[in-house]
Length: 310
Ligand SMILES: Nc1ncnc2c1ncn2[C@@H]1O[C@H](COP(=O)(O)OP(=O)(O)OP(=O)(O)O)[C@@H](O)[C@H]1O
Image 1 (cartoon, rainbow, N blue to C red):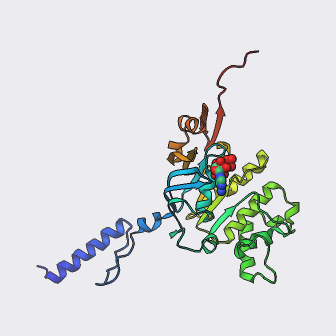
Image 2 (cartoon, rainbow, N blue to C red; image 1 turned 120 degrees about the horizontal axis):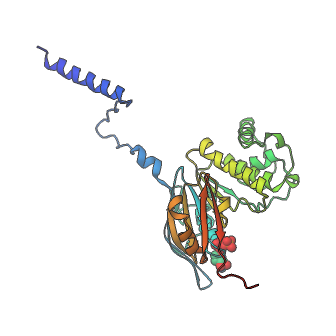
Image 3 (cartoon, rainbow, N blue to C red; image 1 turned 45 degrees about the vertical axis):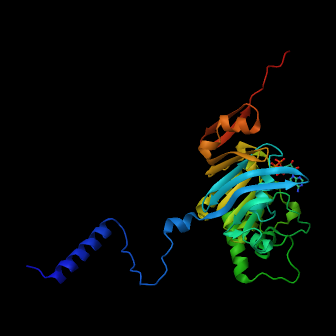
């Protein structure tokens, strides 16, 4: 006959054995008075961007109304819609550039209006194809301006050896090492785009904003840029991104969610396969559009409303 102690010990051993079989670790015992730890799934899925009932009014005109959107770590959103729909204005909130006229915007857990925008912007990677750089900085130097959060290299600023090492590691990741010494004015549009992604990553952001990153790229350069964006899912798994485009062909394969905007309102939002459909896209663009999804890539063909009489 076994004692109570033995039975308890045996039960504990059994539990440990069962946990080991299930590949689970024993739960750490919490002392009385210690704070309850965040559950893993809650910590991982806390929104990186949260827009709630956002409105934006300028010069007596309602530009955005009732915009609600949540982007979480590891999600890659596409922001789609016709010209003038309000995409850049929404991106302006996500990038801590613009304050809303109504509703609330939280970026990286900070409420706009209660935080210094410039400090918040330093934690956001922003890829803008109209990057206003004038000096002939090298690719490595442009990437390093991601650390200083400036367009030009600040006077008398010298990168520390570990910063140069980090910059070179990111350039290597993005296939830019062979042109690390090339000067900005001599770069092709595609090389510039990838250099700006390197610059954005150097600020070690939790959020990456890509504002029409394929603008001005030929079809091959566009594919290289999209490959670079797709690789981020592997190299930066917790990064959240929002990409603005008019063209479904410019959606990276790793796009997880999409939001359609028309006339300042969200017309559809959610997992990309549910949102990027012929019906939803046609409704947002107010035009019949056939959407296709093949081999991970999207394409759209606008139908003519009526046959042209010859
Ligand atoms: N600060 C502002 N003052 C006045 N009007 C503005 C302001 N910002 C945006 N708008 C107007 O709001 C509308 C939405 O602009 P926004 O740039 O967000 O659209 P978009 O979807 O990005 O357009 P596009 O695809 O053409 O770049 C446009 O009609 C624009 O003229």
